[in-house]
Length: 413
Image 1: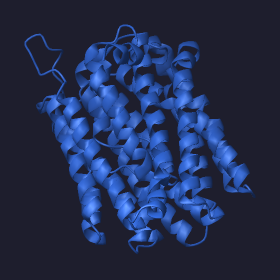
Image 2 (image 1 turned 60 degrees about the vertical axis):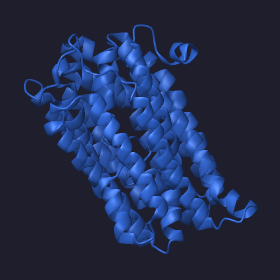
Image 3 (image 1 turned 120 degrees about the vertical axis):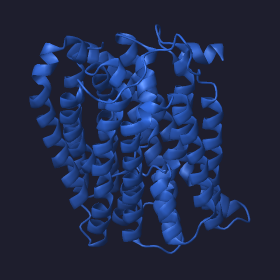
């Protein structure tokens, strides 16, 4: 445990952050393969492209409402209790998907559960963990801690994506049918939920010398609302090409196999993980805001180009290049939000910036699925790229003066 602590925690970070980092890694592992397997599982159960998009939308909508409730009432409860309850909900979600076959019950579980069909973390875990991470470090150590949190998420999501080929291997080399092998993967998701719950039992309970009590938004409300509005544009765009739909695009456009798709998402995840190592270094040199904007725009251009790539090798190369750049803003964004609000409002700020993102992202997968079903395979990728570039430019123009005024909000502090 001492070696793991030295490897994961930056200098100046409190040991209480360690369970959060380990929990993020475990969740990312199963999220990585669920995002790839979800469309394959639903199609194997007899559902169509439209149903895949609707279920993805329902999942994101449920996460958004849960995050909204957290922002409104979560400050009444201790973070550790909420995290443990969410971990149990994760376990129940996995077991329910492993046992279910009918569409409407699965849709209900998707709405109330923690399933994540996207490449990023859109669950209620995120604001809870971000608030605790922000309290666990200060100054440059905070940005580094957020970067390691994102790095673990990207790295283990990549490993999870590689595991997406396991059902086909099991179906070929054992007596399990393909559907049964897919069910086993969702059962594993539930088991990991129990493991995360055990980890979060190690989080410290409240005590007399505990840090500040969380509070509802007050003085930071104007900044948070502006950020939330802009983040929603980015998330709506990202929802058009969440991993589940991007996998579907690869299946439809290039007839890629499940194993090959899993391998691609593995390498894409590794590329995203590598970018997390660069993000805090870049933020120290050019600031958090510039890191968020000027790495995002080239990534969006790569996605637009991939939509028109004539060969699968070209498309995959462009999307790998996108993966090297597109997630570099994640630790910078988390550190930026935590730096521009008061410490007492961090949980509420993380929740209220996450809610519009989740709601916006929830609206777009069904639209992306409908465009795919209509045969417009390039449209979701192009729309995503154009909207993300518009978001980046709007964010930079809206907050460049804030960045100049609050030097600690735009540097590594």
